[in-house]
Length: 421
Ligand code: CLR
Image (cartoon, rainbow, N blue to C red; front, top):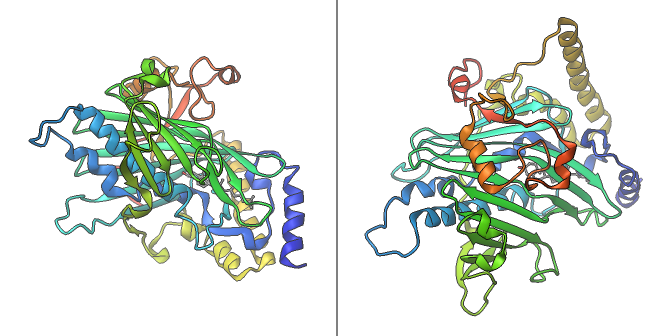
């Protein structure tokens, strides 16, 4: 079969697809040799921007009207724009085409460091700690930790996909929490829905949809609205972000202090008030020029057997070779091993121990994440296990009873003996 007809039959087969990514059998040329777990590394790629709010400490000797908290939120937004560009756009190859990642197994880990190549080493060491904390449905937990600057980004993401007539729609469960501990400031970041464009053409790319939120512990908040080609501006990857003093004011867009608008994968502008004012706008940021820190990963020979690139090596090699039989053989071997492990656990009445993450139950009185919970309450976001960014009291909330969320456990990570960054 040639490329076009293989693709056409694949597209036909996904039309009846049910939401479980692992059950989707894609032709080899659309398979990525990377595990989906690795996709969370891009939370840390723009390290300098992530750490930048730490340097906003006083009025820099100048008289400034805006509060220090607002200026920090603006710095967080710059980083956020850079990271979503890294996560959803610039990560892909030259053809900008998405591929189907490998389905991570329970307990799979990926650890690395972001290089500090600044001359004065002002950034310090930044560690990346990823762990697959659930297999079905899949959940990847992530942490980006800089000890020198006492800054931690932690979160988790669980992808649920639904096929429509022409595209694949994805909702994410989870969120990120960003802690600037030296500043005593925290941020809650929700994960936007997305869909794949260009599926029929055979070159899928990500477009973000609907809304996402950034809530600061200083009460300031930002509401992002995403749109694709031909909606706000006729350009792909368009967004508008309105900044408010607090959640209550955000209920009416005319309360917006600023509006940031443009492309999250390129240039964007800022203007005062609630509208995108193209006459009084100032240039705000260009994601495509943001510095990406190099990721340093140990050679596979030094990796633990649970580390992504070592565990998937044979599968990845066969994908690169395009050998479909070998791909299936190597994949089944991992899947069978996993099935055996689960059976043994069940027989013993035990469950797999998560290495560096704890599942915190927000409905328990004595849970240990009061700071995170406070942000949810400030933003009036649902704390239940619903898709990210669902507001409190929404009809979607009713279907969920639990309030469990994955949090990074630094003590456990520091005590780790076998797997080092
Ligand atoms: C994973 C979590 C990251 C951000 C991110 C970026 C790209 C997304 C990925 C997440 C989930 C899997 C994804 C991918 C783009 C394409 C891929 C939706 C959300 C799908 C599974 C590819 C399917 C391809 C076939 C239909 C051809 O922080």
